[in-house]
Length: 216
Ligand SMILES: [Zn+2]
View 1 (cartoon, rainbow, N blue to C red):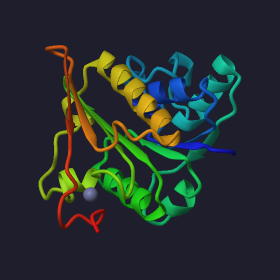
View 2: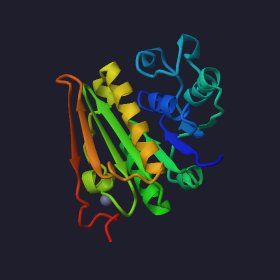
View 3: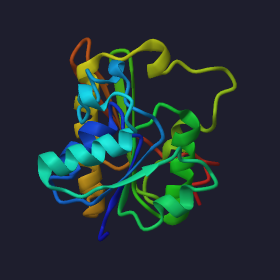
View 4: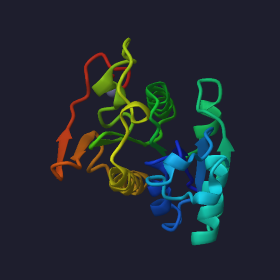
């Protein structure tokens, strides 16, 4: 696939991001190990009632083909250290929208090692964040969060998420991914924060953290 993008996590953020990227002509590799659950349907926009119980990557691949006539590659697996380099090498950009912190750090580290731009997205409750990263040029995920916390963090699975939030954030992630793969770094290293309760949006330019592996 030429100039393909990796979509890591085909859920609330990965679905709307894929819906923007696929019709924009970006070949996609979809990576996820989960199956569609009925509780996903209100925010995971590529899935329908009949997809419940089907692997998310397979249901998403079918939806992208039937809606947009686009062929996407479905890889049913969790992203883990043993497969991450193989699955992400050669991507023009990585769109990481999982709710698993270990995967966020892994995607960040592999993106840095391979020199691939990556867009991280997260949302919980009414709040969402997007962080586009251009390796070697901008602050990265580890500049902000350093490392896995010892205590359990609140995530979408525990706290829930306001349904429409993910479509806003996923589209924003796709917009950043399109920019990064064209070499536009205007938003790289800017942490965008959206609050769906107050309808407020803030973007903060981050400095690279001294001591972060991304900083020379
Ligand atoms: Zn960093």
